[in-house]
Image 1: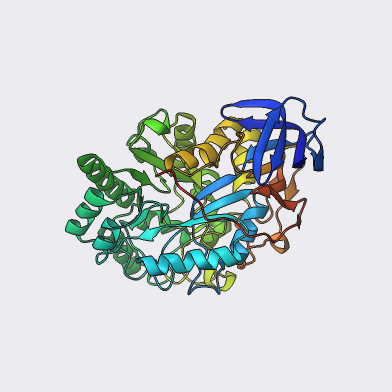
Image 2: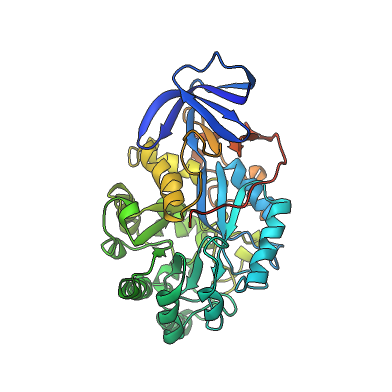
Length: 444
């Protein structure tokens, strides 16, 4: 007897769309086939009219725990992720205390094991002071080493060129970089402060966190990676110019890969008028031409991964003037359905979306037995209703901050069901299980 049998689904997997049934036993996909309806199953899910995809693996989230839990917590944000079809996530180190040593890393794993509904892993943060920790890191302990090559919180800006060089030369695992040049940003801030004082218009954010700042920093990261043959993954790219820095082709054949985030694919400069600080993020949302160039780079396989950079702040914090309003957006609940908008517009195909949100993430980070719909793999699966949409309202938001940059938007799709480790966690707006997720394992 199998535990769950999904029948009549349109399965999007490994570049194709086929009608298949999926049998799940002991948390894993035990059988794929055209007609498995004869199997004896404890539960049958008739997915006729629905699309089945591997769950999104989000390689960049900020869940704010420990130390910043007035904004978000592992429990609340992982819950929002599950409702959004994200079955696994990798969380960033800029919390309090910073995740820059093994004790802090293991503390987060303990917290997630007790609280997270989705599967999880964590980055070790780089600083000017923890090079030896990075050098001695067990590759199976963290998903990657996060390097802030631009302005960051606390002691996480790596601006010592000797340390930076040594990180690229000696990191035993993937280096993920936030690329913005801090001196360039500081000069821009001073210029605009002299002109506007504290009341800088929010639409000038991309002039302060400028394309020049992005390009200068990402150029340096790529130069260092090429010099040392580092495994580099450049996060949340935002400019048309940077798309030319990355090669097209199979991500499995690259030492340098690139990520884009859902909000940079959805919003552009004209949205500052209506959204203001709600779309203030670092690096900044820029021009429509940049947004379109990033979408084109996804089509061309220059961009390998799509993520969220989910970063919740309270509504009250976001109401401040330019220098007071923090940068970041809550995105995990709406990430996948925002990507399906590009499908409905004829910009991205379903296999492209699945490749960039699941397959490529699993491959780039060497994640064990996830990211594909394959026999023997963990059953991290999402059923999507592409025919019936909804309007996002704030009272539907699960993230602790209670707001969404998509409020009022009429989505054409919705997440129908989310299964994690073979357990039906979420279905049509209701959570059916509180079973906790698993720590991701790596083929390293």
